Image (cartoon, rainbow, N blue to C red):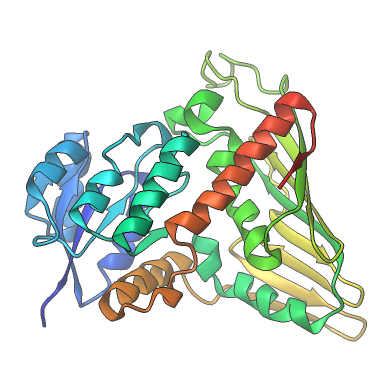
Amino acid sequence: MEKFRVGLIGTGGRCGSHMNALIKMDDVQVVAVADPIEERRVAAARKMGATRLYKDHREFYAHESAETLDAIWICIEPTAHDELTEMGAVERGIPFLVEKPMTLDLAMGDKIAKAIEEKNLITAVGFQDRYLDLVNMIKDELPKHKKGGLVYGAWCGGIPGVWWWQKKSTCGGQLVEQNIHLLDGLRYLYGEPLSVYATASTGIVKPGENGVSPEYDTDDHSTCVLRFKDNVTATLVSSCYSRDVRPNCGYVITLEDMIIDYRLRNNIIFTDAHKTVDIKRGHEQTDDLDRAFIDAIKTGDRSLIRSPYADALKSLKIAFAANKSMETGEVIYF
């Protein structure tokens, strides 16, 4: 059987989940890896059996093409995206999956989306929760009930250890870098929002203390109110100041006759007047994300991909609109 040939650009933290997914697929072979950290790219190559190693994406694209690769996984920090990171794949006609956030430059995102459309290229973005069985249970359940109601979403915890996370200029803030998963999930469940209003606060986390960078300037917490059609209002909170304790993250959806309590990537509890049902996550969503992307390329069935680049860009734009609302105090209408 001829293997599906994969190249990896960026082999750090998040790429580890993709490598764990890909290595289990008998029809897939990672053949090329690129990473500026030699130890990391060598370790990834050894793990995946890749024989072509590059120091960065520029060297990677100088040697790779649609004749040598069937797809590329791009897993790099927000500030590492430049004019060639995705465009190199587009220009060579190589389908790619890119992790979020795809860029901190929305103009660049628009340029890439236009080029993808012109090439009619298959793409995917790592909004993994769209492939999660628990989230799709919510999507299947909502049409069974009267429309409207309140949604509370939360992603609360501490500060991740990666360097770019502690400055808003290098990560976009927690909503853009992390809680965009739940923001995108709201779009997946309810469609496009009508408006967003957001506030943010600093002062709890002290720069230079408890291992925090002296340059820390991102928000300690933020709250977004998103209005959707059919009288749905979602409040989405983000926080990074809780070092030792963490509240339940996910969604609590209050319907007229049911409460849906989704515990982030762990379980979901459906409660109505007669019973409570608690369901655990059935499988790893990254496995399904990667498999869907590969099968879409193999078969040409783009419906398998739940978050192509152009659609994911809409979620990114909403997150940046929320940032604008935090800065100006204005309601942003779409």
